[in-house]
Amino acid sequence: MQDKKIKIALLGTSLSHGGVNKMQALYSIAFENAGYEVYHILVNPEIEFDYRGKVFHLSPYKNGVFNRLRRFFILRNFIRNEKFDFLIDFRGRTKPLMEFLLTKFVFTSRYIPTVHNYKLDFYFPKNNWISKLLYQKTFKIVTISKAIEDKIIDLYGFSNVTTIYNPIDYDTIQLLADKPISINFPYILAAGRMDEDNIKQFDKLIETYAQSDLATSAYHLVFLGDGVLRSQFEHLVERLQLKEKIHFYGFQSNPYPFMNKAHFLVLCSKNEGYPTVLTETLACGTPVVSFDCASGPNEIIKSNENGLLVENQNFEALKIVMERMISDKELYAKCKKNAQNQKDLHSFEQFIKDWKTILT
Image (cartoon, one colour):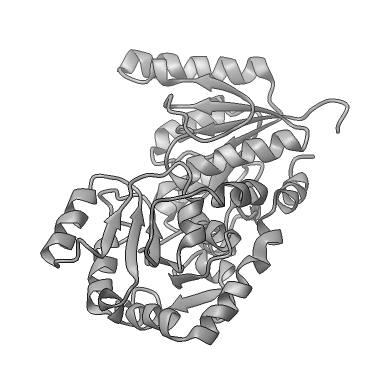
């Protein structure tokens, strides 16, 4: 424990729904356990995830031109008065002018923007010169995968970029994974938000399942998650006459029993950053199948060891691999045995060790 606690502000959208928001909550738990003083600065008021630290809400000043201007000064004064040692930013940063004003006049602490997606448009202006103006002299840029780090360096030539893998709370996962669920059939699992951008491509997964041997086997397909596209996916299931085999369980505050009892989890996203659903499922002792997206899965999955990687966006290959995870008993047993071998890579201990190289 330090004599004077290092004071960290975590700036984000909310502490509810979404992988990035969940990571902000986990960061706060890890940082407080390590002896840091933690604050959350939130744009929206929703809180659903377990977290640590104090919360400062900006939501009362969200709407209207006057309120947005007022919020700017309230945020600036709050950061100045609290004298944070570090400000770690989880937000998407898509408005260059606003980010210029924030980085130049508000984020006076050592500012650390984080990057959680391989699609850099969420975090950097398309104009490289503006990106360099905003972030070239930033204290540090932290990415969640080596692939994202390499892409940023290639595009912008930044020297202030490093990768720190997202943590998972292994002990909590183990505790919660044993909770009962009302599923009495074997199933494969898919999980994620069903937003209109359709990043997870659940419609294509439904069609792939329908065309596979799994649709006539004992194995069902279970979805966790909600969003505007859920009704479309349910209608697709009806058209395919698979209502008895494909099930939607909505958003689950505790998804770990579903991961624990699944035969395997499948991920077929258009793109990812560093998909926590893979690391959490493996922590439950369950193998995973995933597209080899440009970022994330091949840093988590050792193919034919703890799961299977599939050629990116090849749904025919995905169908074959899903069938193989059912039919090849020896391969499946090997993957299940090795599922938890990567847990130390994502432990709180390793996470804090990596962050201490920055927070000094």
